[in-house]
Length: 409
Image: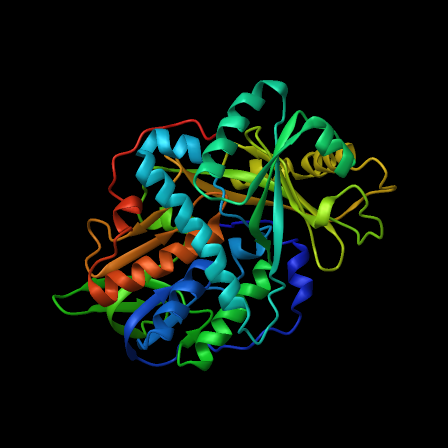
């Protein structure tokens, strides 16, 4: 599966990443992590930090898949609002999900402070605006729920928005506690940090097959090298659906641009993250080199040729949407534009843990708009399941949970 068109601005920010060889011998380990994206990096880092003997293999290069196509918005708020989560899963479970996301943002920030490669992790506020007047009542209810449960939020009326930003919207929630990050640098930095602690990393090492016994798993690479492990973690992102299709998942296409570096950011409060109530939604952020990254305009197709053929038009549309919000920015242009596969679940929660037919295996599928945050949650849950056999929150994300299609709101 070709996950994206490989044109993101992040690639140019780390021209000389660390080098890792391919596997050329038979080895053994405690835990084998398959996948060198954000999910694999975080779970390998968590397990290595806990003292486990971990091997990480990636069939391409580290962060070469969806992690490089990510826009690096780190938010506790889900594509599915707190109110909607409570309606779908019950008040306690819905709130716990949001609290876990909030904790994961904090944990990511803590990890980033100790990395040798600067991941450009910067705390930010988020502006979540009503796309139309009809969305305002639901937005007020969402704000009330967030405020009632202790989240750092402020409700903005239309005049409040217009006095602070270069655009007017019917209403918005301004929230604290989010962040932005360079997703490629973060993935490489986490892998490097874990490698210093003992993680063994192998690139260009594809896994072809495996079989489990009562006490270990034998895994075979494309060169018939073997890895004997007590446990395997599949952190293979959207390509996991090629291993086993999960009926709770939906694979679609999304589009992103990065503009030229800009000098004038007036009308944009504190460089906050911006997104909206419409589905699919437009979202924006800035980068450390003063570009605007904007994404959205999702399409309900996962056919590569169909996805990519729409990219030129999507670039124009995204530029137009950004220009509507910031009309004072002259000669706005997209220096980068890419199309990518995007995965979500029908019920709005990621998929984490074991699944039938794969003994001694765990899966980390951080599907949804908060993939990095979900991967942080998943890393801790899987590490607990391997180390202790249980985790108090694992049931929320179990892969075999009943589900139904629900509106993302």
